Structure formats: structure tokens, C-alpha cells
Image (cartoon, rainbow, N blue to C red; front, side):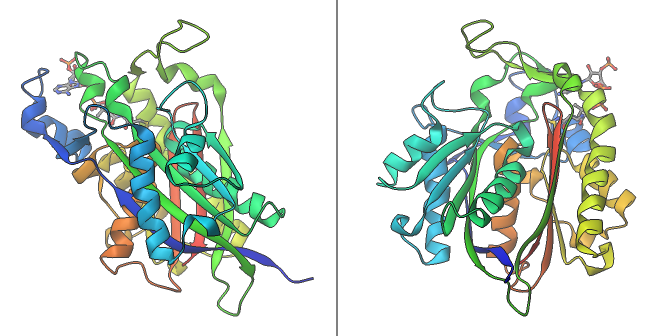
Amino acid sequence: MSELRSIVRGVGGYLPERVMTNDEMSKIVDTSDEWIQQRTGIKQRHIAAEGELTSDLAVAAARKALDAAGLGIEGIDLVIVATTTPDMTFPATAAIVQQKLGMHHGAAFDLQAVCSGFVYAVATADSQLKNGLGKRALVIGAETSSRILDWTDRTTCVLFGDGAGAMVLELAEKDAEDRGILASSLRSDGHHWNKLYTDGGPSSTMSIGHIRMEGKEVFKHAVGNITDVVRDVFEKTGTTVDDLDWFVPHQANKRIIDGAGVKLGIPPEKVVLTVDRHANTSAASVPLALSVAVEDGRIKKGDLVMLEAMGGGFTWGASLIRW
Ligand code: ACO
């Protein structure tokens, strides 16, 4: 029997117009450009305009990914939106995205795995396509995290920003180059939920709450968790770090990315780093970084690309793609 692969047809990213620098942040809370850059690598973040919703960011990124794929929305069978900041408690933001893109057919749902959401969504779309749900999926990571920040808490508000990224996947027979998603590895351990969470929600407080985080604890677990899933994916595919062309990590913190890179033996020139431009955009960060590296010509057809992320839950995961 022939083997199937989900091939990347196009990616796209979108950042809201408004840029907020570290210096501007230092007027809101007791912080400095130097502290933020030294601890995180972040220089600025983008903030959604009043009335600009997660679905708007998602649609803007989706349109770019569809254009890059040379497709219209009629070619898509499945929409998955990875988000922690949905427009509303329900319906799924994916349904609103469907409506804004003029799509009446197919299926659409949200996926909630916080910062790992996009990697979880890519793995989910891959398995759904292979299971016969359709031929093409639009996978989006989109967040307006600025709306769930406590703007008086300097330990969290300096870290996050708004944005969206999208990817079009298409099911095809495995070809001679073996392009497409080769393997994914997903993990979670809910025992750590209270190290990174919002202190509210529809069922607990009937409000949305704000991000709370034990930064040191998150940092401590991040590097180990990331390296575990990346190694797992290498093992599953019989590849090694020497075969890798590009490492596209979740853009939360440069120190976490550097730590994982050193532990895995990935040279810095193979790491795509965009956290300086947009801070931690949660589920949007991996597709935003991907879209930058594709648009500037670094990631090319045939390249071996490793995606990884870790976030609240804890959740973490990795996906290896032959571009
Ligand atoms: N500006 C200035 N000073 C600050 C700030 C700030 N924004 N935030 C904290 N500080 C102070 C603290 O109050 C503390 O002061 P004290 O020594 O007088 O008590 C001092 O800086 C050191 O604080 P630490 O928490 O020890 O700083 P640390 O070196 O751990 O860096 C950070 C904090 C950046 C949050 C780090 O722990 C981290 O990166 N953790 C990972 C968190 C992360 O990336 N989360 C994103 C979501 S999860 C994910 O995506 C992987």
C-alpha cells in the first residue's frame, strides 16, 4: 500500500500594526530595555488594535498562506485554529475564521495547548488528513495575549505579544524526495498546570483571568522537555541533528532556545530566531518564525525542518518536516 504524506503548500504570518518597544514598556512597569533583552532576547512586541480580534489576525495570516499555496478557501477541507485567546468562549474561533473567509463547507475547530498549540495542530491535521477527513487543512496559530496580561505585573507583561501564523497542508502520496511531515511527538503533564495559567475562566470565575507564571519553574522544565521530544522525533525518523537544515523553535525566550540548541548540538546558524521582533506570541510563534524564514529564502524545498514548542499544561511537542 502506498504511504501518504501531508505536504506544506504555503505559510503566512501577520503582526498587528502597533509596535510596542521595551522602552515604552518601562513607562508602564518597573523594567528596562536592558533587563528584558538580557533575560529574554525580546526587543519589541505587536499589540492588536481596539476591536481587532484573534479571528482577524488569524484571517490575515490565513490569506497569506493561501496566497503562498496558490489556493482559494474552496480548496480547504479542514480549519484548525490553535489559540488560548479565542474571540469568545464559544463558538470556536475557527468557525468565525470560516465565516470571515467565506467558507461554508468542511470542518473547523479550535485546539487549546497554549504555546504548543501550533505543533499540536500540525500533528492533528496530519493525522486527520491521513485518516481521510479531507485533502487540505488550514492550520493557524493566532493570539491576542495582550488581552489576558496583567499590565501591572512586570514578571509576565513584558514577555508576550499578539500575532498569527498559518500553514496550508495537502495530502499526497509519498514521493521520491519524501517531502511532508515525517513524524511528530506530543507530550503533556497536567501536574504542572499551576506553574503557567490564567487565574480565571468561564467555569471557575465566569471571567477570563490573567496570565500567572512561575518563570523559573517554566524555564527549568522547558529545555529538558524540548530536547526530549526533538530527540524522539529524530529517533522515529532515523535522522540525526546532522541531517537538520533548520530548527524553528517556539519563540518564548532566547535563553531557552539557546539552551535547547546547545543541548541538542544544533549550531546557532541553523536556528530561526524571531522572538526579538514579536516577543512570545504563544501558538502563533512557530508559524510566524516559519513564515519569516520561508519569505527571506532560508527555508527551501527539500530542507529538513524541525518545529518544537512548550507551554502551559505543561504541553510540549515537535514535528519534523521535509519542506
Ligand atoms: N524587569 C525588571 N526586573 C524584573 C522583571 C522585569 N520585567 N521581572 C522580574 N524582575 C526582577 C525580579 O523581581 C527579581 O528581582 P529580585 O532579585 O529583586 O527579587 C529579578 O528580576 C530576577 O527575577 P527572576 O525571576 O529570578 O529572573 P529570571 O532570570 O528567572 O528571569 C524570566 C525571569 C525571564 C521570566 C525567566 O524565568 C524565564 O524566561 N522563564 C521562562 C518563562 C517563559 O518564557 N514563559 C513563557 C511562556 S512558557 C513558554 O513559552 C516556554
